[in-house]
Image 1: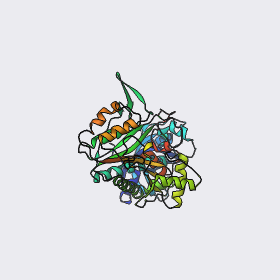
Image 2: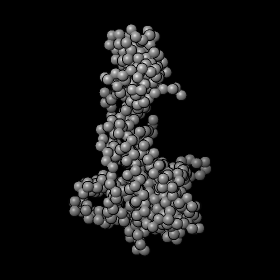
Image 3: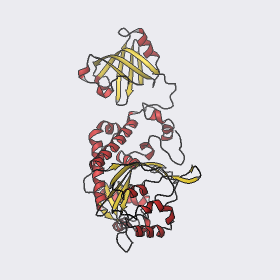
Image 4: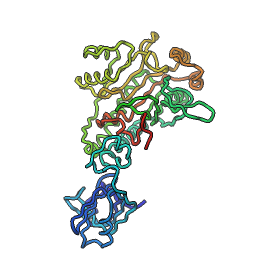
Length: 437
């Protein structure tokens, strides 16, 4: 690699030394025999100052004729300059143009010319050059790093399950069929069945940064058809409370990481992030219905929480001082077949959702580990037992009590950073209309 310095690495100790920087031409200003080039890299901007009488004619002409967003590498003496970005400037001895950008640009990376989201996504590479947009993905990277580190500390093993499956993971119909030689196959809805199967192997705590594919015809600011999630499963649990405790500790670890190590990015986005306090409130589904009815919104027992209900509950919880809160004890009838019933009556389940400011970001449960009960639940959902042969086989030879969850990264990021559309939290989003770039 070219031995260069990022703009964030420049310091007083380098004053007077010859260094190399590289990046994109963010701005060019010409004032007679003086040219300023602002070079943008991943971490910020560094100023090249070219006084005509102190730089070579070749270097001056190169700077004079360069177009915005061209890729350059420059070598020169660093010196302090209070008015320059970062407090430094470079008087270049050499400027090399690696790639000249065409003009006009399809998008203004400086943000001086506004563009709507569709225009931005159509020219996503240019859009990602904006520091405030790149900040979103630096934070996203930090969130995933924190999650991995926390789970590794808790002795979880990272796995990678198949993305091509033969039957539905969740029992739904929103599947993307694919041509897989002479067989019928689908893109995976989640790693659910595989991570449960692994609980019977001795790999008793696993996680995956997974990709979900959901063929749902949504067209909202909250939904995508390709989703990233942190999926966890753990065995030898007492009940679902063990999972809730893991989740709240994981969330706090992730938000703390952002708060402590992404301050520059938070400021670029103009956000204020607070570390949530533990424990998170646990509120049973039946109590949620009561609170909603008191607020003028009636749901029947057995109905899943609608978008309107989630939003209203979020407002109620905010008034009570809760940003993160668990909804527990859902009706068994609205949860997947592998969800553990609360008791023999099979009316309630040991399922839960974690809500963040009126939006679900995590869904999970204690799972059924008894083979016969699992078969009964598959039948109760009017599903074909023979479609789950390999999955069920894992439960015939000793399966410990276990449970887990899936956490939507895009929703977490959207809510944490107060983004206006979930597509802003994805590099190249996929929805029912967008398949490019």
